[in-house]
Length: 167
Image (cartoon, rainbow, N blue to C red):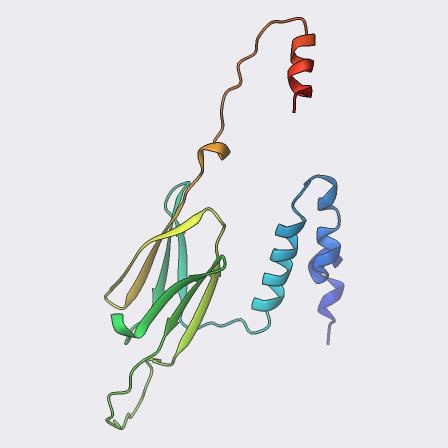
């Protein structure tokens, strides 16, 4: 049997090795890198595959998460934001009848699906239609983070240095 690690670069096998070179270029991002590392460790332990989902990028600031939740009603789905994470939970209420299935191919088991969201991303809306849950997301860019033009003035240089030294 082949050992797959021979074909996988060390930077993929060891996330710390991959991140060690970033500190040369990104100043002040240590928190984000440690958050990404923790998120990766937490969510790759048990990667769920139910329910299936899509993430669509509508444009530069809008996204849609689509989840196939056939068999779930509006009252059986809970969506919440918790510390930068979008958590979607589904619990099917048993109707009290014990139906005998010859074949049960539609899974209606409880689930929890978690998505990490950027601090600037907000949930706009969520709707359930024809067994598809659609969650609309929008990236809100604050004015201070938007690109702005800086006017270039002619001068002697000393005035600029004096203004830069002011507390």
